[in-house]
Length: 370
Ligand SMILES: Nc1ncnc2c1ncn2[C@@H]1O[C@H](COP(=O)(O)OP(=O)(O)OP(=O)(O)O)[C@@H](O)[C@H]1O
Ligand SMILES: [Mg+2]
Image (cartoon, rainbow, N blue to C red; front, top):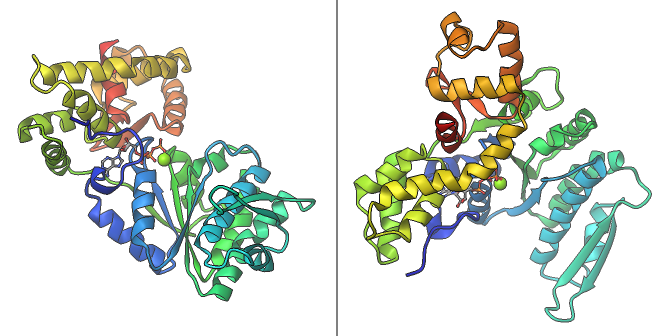
C-alpha cells in the first residue's frame, strides 16, 4: 500500500482544509489588496500559495522564491525569472514573446531559445549594464504596464520574503519595491515568510518603507479535529484504518504543526498493525529530528540555551519573574532580555495563550528531554 503522506508541498487531496484562508487570500488578490502572510518554518505557507494560485484562474499567478537571495541583483533576477517564465509559458503566441515582454520591461536583457525536445521556450534573463536599483525601481511598474497592455491581472507571490531583511541593502530594496507596489493597478502582492519578528517589523514599524502598505496576516493553526479527520480519510483512501482517537493523539502530539503531522502520519502509516505503533511513531519522530535540533542548539550561546530550555520546561507567563530567573539560574533581567530578543528574532520562541512557548513543538519535547 502506498504511503499517502509527503514532506513536499501539499496539494490536491494532500492539502487539509484552510478554507477560510484560501477565501481571504483569493478575495484580497482579486481586490488588489497586497497581503503578507507570516508563519513559522514548515507551517504550510508555500503549499497555501500554490493552492491559492490554482484557485485564481482569473488571474496570472507568478511565483518567486527569494530563498538564498544574497544581493539586490539576485532579488531583481529572481523576480524577472519568475515573471518571464510565467508570462512565457502562458503566452499563446510564443514567437513574438520576447518582443512583447521587452516592450514593457525596457531595461531587461532577455534571451529566449526554443527547446529542440519539447519546443517550449527557455529563458535566460540578465540585468545588463543597468544597476539592480534601477531594475528594482521599475520592475513592478513594468509588470503593471504589461498587464494593462495585455488585459491581465497578476498575483505576484514573493515567498521567503524574510531573506530580503537579511541583506545589508534591505532598506533600499524595500523602498524601491514599495514605490511599484503602491502604484500598481493590475498586480497584487502575496508576500510569504517565516522569521515572524523580522517580517512584522518590516511591515508594522512606522519608520520602515513598507509600513501600512499591506494587509498583514498570521497563518492560523489548522484545527486539531479537522486535521485528525483528514488523517483518517487519507488512511482510508489508502486502504488502512486509523481511529479518530489515534489520529487526534498524533495531531495533538505535534500541536497540529503541518510538517510534523505529515511526518508522524508517514511513520505511523507504515507501522499500522504492529506492536505499540502509536507510541513508537511518536518516539521515532523525535529521534529523527534530533540531529537538526542538536545543530540548532549548538549555534546558541550558553545563556540562550538555558533560557530556551527553561521556556520549554516551564512555559512561563512572565519571563522576568524572580522565581523563574532563580529556578533556572538565568541571572540578570538585562541578560534575559538580550537572549529573549535573539530567540524571538530567530523565531524560536513566542508568546502564545498567555505564556512563553518554544515555537516548534517537537523541538520543545526534545529540549525537555535534555
Ligand atoms: N494544509 C495542509 N494540509 C496538510 N499538510 C500540509 C498543509 N500545509 C502544509 N502541509 C505540510 O507541511 C509541510 C510544510 O509545508 P510547506 O512547505 O508548504 O510549508 P512552508 O511554511 O512553506 O515551509 P518553509 O518554511 O520550509 O518554506 C509539508 O510537509 C506539507 O505537506
Ligand atoms: Mg515555503
